[in-house]
Image (cartoon, rainbow, N blue to C red):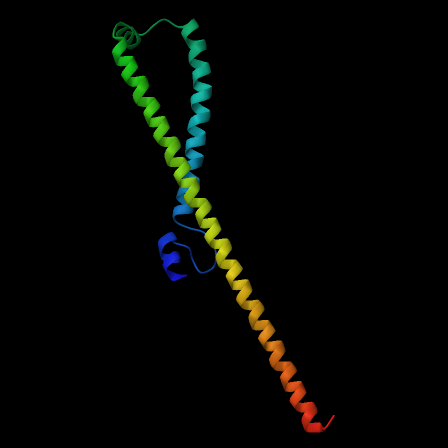
Length: 134
């Protein structure tokens, strides 16, 4: 139990901290980034119709290899972000599974303890009955 608590930074109270919090935050950041990119691409299409082409856009349009490099590198970064989010989500699920298994083990121990207490009470009652001769 202790090695998993240290490894996954799970506190004794059962509250999740550390990697899980970071994973959730990064997943939320990635989702926000994806939403922004979807909305900004629609805005860019509208802007292209209404505004003139800037000098940077002219330079990029004259050198298409630069735009291809920029597009491929941004695609690679997006793919890396997606892969990192998947890995963090998997870690989060592993932590949830660990916490569930830990609680399950604790409940099983509590159940066995209660059964042992009941058996000891039954034995004590039987001994008292034998002493009384019932």
